[in-house]
Image (tube, rainbow over all chains, first blue to last red; front, side, top):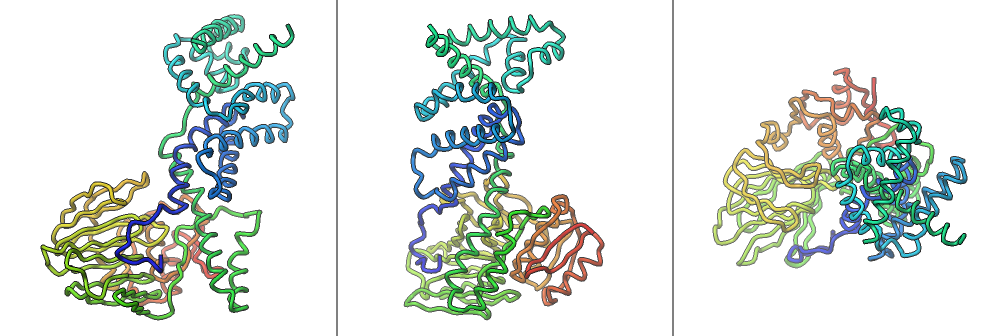
Length: 173
Length: 312
């Protein structure tokens, strides 16, 4: 700033400005992603802010791959945190399986698939939509969902398997 | 057969996670902006301190002082919530004039204002801890200056040569008028218009026309917003702190920027506490804090060359 000539005003965006752009576009996505993996919004917040802290340190060497790097780092941080919290091994393995394909292909199709899933979700009838949200976003058990909606656990299972079949078909189209 | 089972399992797990995410709640723009502020504020403070390290390395005493200043940042266990609302700046001990060919620069220390007359007759009152860069003789086409900090401009009329004030984020373009620009690093900038007409724009975006009595500022979403200015805004040029029903955070930012001292809050609710406060700017920091303490709203102290604001 000190050496800036007043006739040379158009300056390159600073590190902070470039970082702010990345942060504002990716932070909400990563929060939602980490919340699904962790099943806990506060844990997700801590993890994402830690991930951004590391990116801040390495930002100059991070280029167009930044988004994929952020997703992968968030996923790894979530798994480490779950291990630390001594969450059941089967649950952690389920998350490893769920995220394996994304890691393998560098998350390049993750957001596209997500958009498709959002579109399908909007067209789901009730109570299927609510059942899915309670099971897979709020991470409630079939029993809890059944109690909350005043239906039997078997009915919850039926909604889920019907929804999954439908989603599989729609996603493969 | 086993392989196929596993593949099915993978796809189902992925599908479940994907729909969990798709049906989940995405944080709002405001929540994201708040997360950004919480993220960047401590990092800004630490990077500007690191810059100091290289400048101050010649003097062992300066390095020692810096180590002390960095000490709270190096600690990993933060005992209480700390929200820094103003970070002290590098500013000279006395008013400094620099001349390099056509390029002129004036810097002010804490607690001082100075008047400058530019080559076209425009008068500038430069606020504390501020820097103005300008050309000794303006070119034929336009008049441009660059400001960090706060200044009042009384621009000489010259319809053929627009007068432009550049700051880090906001640009103000005028033909002849009186207005204030406030653009300290790390605080949201604003422009207050008293007479005439000016156009403000944000980093080269479409300019907006201001009317006298209006204030343009960057809101929390990072957008330029116009509102009627409160009367107290003009008081700085008369040597007064004047706050009527203002949020304590804004009050302390102005006090911090006048005395060039960092301000840290240890209580989030106090940021939004509104106060009425008037005092001469000639008072010392301790005198101002004593008066604030007498109001009984919060506890104001100086610790490690910082003002801290905490609950009583």
